[in-house]
Structures are given as structure tokens and as C-alpha cells.
Image 1 (cartoon, rainbow, N blue to C red):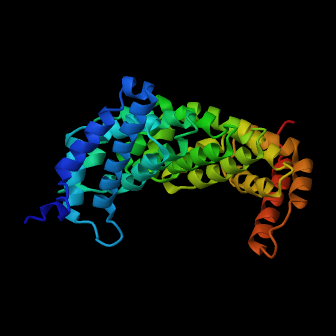
Image 2 (spheres, rainbow, N blue to C red):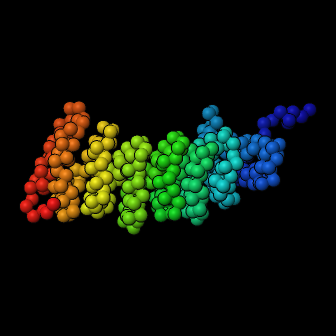
Image 3 (cartoon, rainbow, N blue to C red):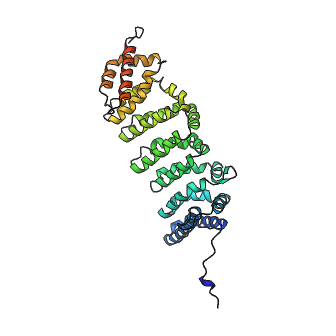
Length: 343
């Protein structure tokens, strides 16, 4: 008597997993989505296949993943154009499926064939997928999932470079001020990664798009939203002080409009913003090659500036901060006494 029906089913191969994921995602067509029962059935199939994908990529808690199978699955997912479907079907996927996808995403991106990241290479050949993920910040249901996936992509210089140079990048200046706090915060995390992860890439971008970028960034620094002002000010000091951006900083501190922004932020009601503004303001003042326009502004406002700085909240027992403050006050007073400045 045969008891073969008690035998566990044969584990699927990576090729089979990729094929079943593709078929189940393609079943989420317009007709299926329009019918409740059909959609429920199709979604169950997708979720089941995503669990299989997750187990193959991450293990099941008892059995560790097989590295050869993990790599083969990534290769097949690219070969079958499943990567395209994973992104484009995101708005249709349920919460569990999205969670599994985000969990698997970073593992897929890390898979290498020889010296090539196969999934990264696929995205490089389908760069519109990155624009799709960026635009998804407008959909609060999937915004956080897309943010996670974007930040994994940004770890790779070629993908970060594309997003920075894409027309969709300017959307971040809107997304970081969305009314939904969680989405806005997540968008800012992605925005920050874009401007700090790859110094040389950022420097090239800022050099080529200086005016466009800083026109938009000035609006963040002067936003009525406290969180936006504080985060954008802190981020500004981070990426301006990166060695690859030294020429960008030199250009920035030549501009009177940004000196005025920092002077305004020194008067902010927030202690944190005042201190962050000081650390950028001091670079304007300490610049040995201050343009005449900057000297004029400092001289004209020297009494108010000295008063502001003397009353700037301290940082506890931070002697270095106090010393910097004194040096900046002395330099402002020195500039104000220059005989050739006409006020």
C-alpha cells in the first residue's frame, strides 16, 4: 500500500518561484482588481508566493537560506522581468505582501554574479522604476514601503546619481513638507541619504545644478514648519562640510542671501535652530575672502549680531563653542571698523 500522499511536496526551484511570482502578479490585472472575490483570490496567491520567496531568501527560522538558491532566484527575477512587476504592482499589493517585499528587497539588491549586482544592473536598465518609487510618496498607503526600497537603492552610487539628476528629485522638496508626519519624515530620510551617501556624486550634482537646488533649499530653511527648518539646517551643515563639497561651500558663503537667512535663523525661537544656524553663520564670518557685500551686511548689523551672539544659548560646559563665539564676535567687530566700507 502506498503512502506517497503523506510525503511533503517537493520544494520549488528558484526558477519555479520566480515564475509563480510573475504569474500571480500578472493576474492582478484591471479586470481582477475590479472584482472583489477575484482580487481576494489573486492576492492570496501573491502573498503565498511572497512567503515562499522570503523563505528562500531569508530562511524559515529553522533552515538557513542556501546562497546558491538565493543568487539563482535573484537572477531569475531579473530574467523574467519580475523586478518590474514587483515595483509597478506595489499600489495593488496588500499590507503583508508589501512587508515581505521590503524584507526581501535589500537581499535581492546585494546579489552578485561575478562583479555585477544583477538586480542593480536591471534597475540601471529600467531607471523609470526609480521614478515610480519616488512618485509613490504621494500615496500614503505605500509611501513608507517605497521609502525603504528607495533607501536600499540609494546605497548604490549609480542609482543615487540617477535620482539626483532625474526631474523627480525636485518632488522631495514637496514630500518633506507633507502634512502626514510619518510620510514627510520618511521622505526626509531618503532626501538626506541622497545628499550624504556618495560625496563625489553629490558634489557633481550640486556643481551642475547649484542655482536650481539652492533656490529650492532656501524655501526649506525659511519654512514656517519648525521640523522642516531644523532638519534642513542640520542637513545643510552635514553635506556642505563634506570634503568633496568644499567648492560648493565656498560659493555658498559668498552669497548675501544665505547670510541673511542664517542671520534670521539666529533669531529663531528654537535654541537648537539658533545653534545650528551659528555653525553655518560662523563660516561666512570666518571666511578670509569675504566679498564686499558680506562685509557690508556684517558691518551694518554688527551691534545686533554681537548682541545676538552674546545671548546665544550655551551648550553646557562646551568651552570650544564659547571660544568660537568669542572669535566670531571679534571678527564682526573688526569688520565693522574697516575704514573703506561705506555703509
